[in-house]
Image 1: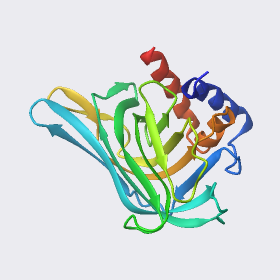
Image 2: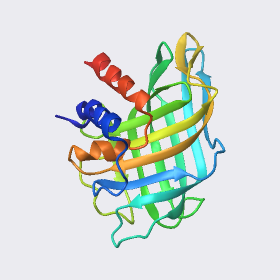
Image 3: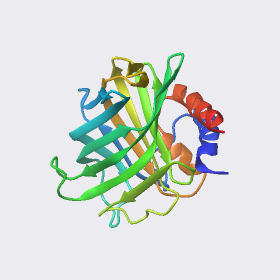
Image 4: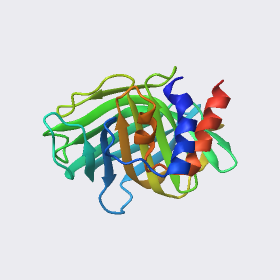
Length: 230
C-alpha cells in the first residue's frame, strides 16, 4: 500500500481521532506562518497565444517551526523564513467548487530571510495543488508514480524515503477557482497564508503526521484525484 493510497485512511483516522500531534517521531518538520497577512501570492497569466499558467511564490515569509527532528536536537519554537516558487504544468480542472492542477517547484525553510544561514529544510517537488473555497493544499509523496519530492537539510539527518510534504494555503482570497486563457484553464490568482508538515518515514503513522492540521474537507478531493488518475 503506497503513501497516496493511505491518504484516505489517514483522513478517516484524523476525522475520528482528531489531529495528530507534531511530537510523532516520523515528523521531520512542522511550521506555521507568523501573522495573518497573505504572503503567498499566485499569479495566473497567458503563455503566448497558446497556453496558460499559474505561478505560486513566496519569499522571506516569517514562520515558526514547531517541530523539527534535528541532529543535534534543536529546541523549538524556532523563528525561520519560508520561500516557495511553483509553476503549473498542464491545464487545471474544476468540478463544482473543487480545483486541481499539476505544479512543480522548490521550497526552503532557512534561518535568515534572504535564504542564508541554517537550511532547516529545502527541496523540490512535482505534484498537484487542489482544494476549494478558502483552502488549497499541495500534498506530495515520493513513492507515488508521477510524483516526486527531494529534501536537503543541514539540520535534519533522518531523510529516508519515502519523503512527503503537505503545504496548506489558508485564507485563500479570492477563493479557489479557475480562469481561462487561450482556451486553457489555470488556477486563478490569489493571496494566502501558509503552513506545512514534512515526513521522511516509511510508516503508515506518517500520514497523520504529514496531514495534521490540513482541512478535513480536502481529503475527499485527494481520493477524487486518485480515482481520476486510475
